[in-house]
Length: 157
Image (cartoon, rainbow, N blue to C red; front, side, top):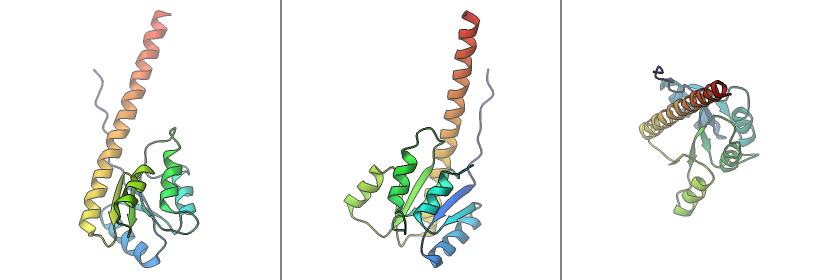
């Protein structure tokens, strides 16, 4: 029987926020919660990090940023089905139901409205960590099944 595959919770996170003070405060909170924080001040920088080598599995994106908004970053990340899953949480002051629906349709996993409670953000990121850990375990199991099928086919052939 195979040994259970246990993946540690992701520790690296992208924080994309164009407002300097907000970015600094969020970065401090995230660091205090045990995250290794990568930062971007605009959407292009966020996308570059998320498409780069060894991207973080979690991202907190502001909706309204220069060069590319957070929704477009989400769309582009979701368009890449060949990459490991990235949990995307959108921060915004927008609160209309149609805006929330638009964000979710763009591929956002979660949505938090500014101003927000830091403990709520922490709890939502905890959910994100669990989702990513489960996705990693599932991907490893799929690979294990692929190898077993290939071995079985090789024995037949």
